[in-house]
Length: 276
Image (cartoon, rainbow, N blue to C red; front, side):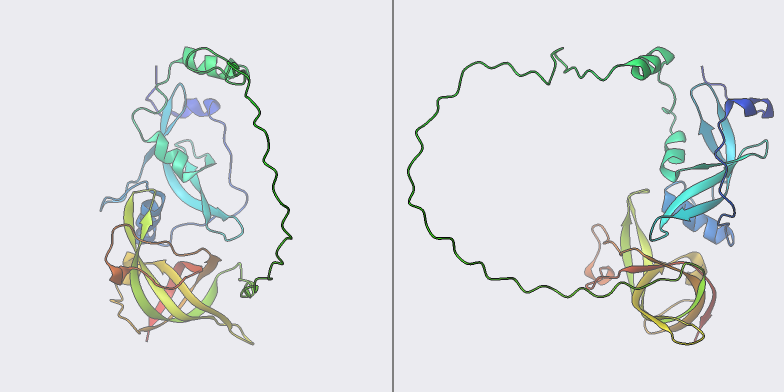
């Protein structure tokens, strides 16, 4: 039976995986809502504040305090959630999303234990070992046809396409200049909807010495950005992080919301935005 009381004395039942050092926090409520939609945890106007953390024998209410970023492109997130006793632990967004389903954790203990203790033997639905195939008849070998050997044709070497050199992207938050190229839609598998994005061109990372030319990049068309009522050609300055993450395509959308050129970089968490 599921225990639905999130009391503090249940702390000993939870295996905590605390975050490693500092983690990303939310800039404001709009940033919080934007990340919830990205993770597929809430698409309502009012951002959901509490979520269920479930185990085999209990469930407890938790809040999302922030998130960690990792991966070579820094585009993978692990949530940092807080329990009512103040303990923090990390969890994948998709797993926390599964925990919100009413069917999560209702598997019987007997079935669960049977799965845990099951050996590596594989059995098909009819009870037979799938690794053993019954031979009903021996194949008849056909006489091989004699073929006249033909001299191999010399293969012409295909011209190699020159790949553009990979950019060494800064890890920390930096200052950017860019202009608005297009508004587009990209399919989000977490909430099974199209998300609004802004495609930027002439993107530069401003260094003290030489600027780093990014070219094209994209970012979420968040409520923070919508306050600026952006239009095509608008020039922007902002702070943020850049990662190598290709822009996907929208699902069942008009051509005006599709981008006809590859956009290989994403701007994360733009802040201190100045529209010129």
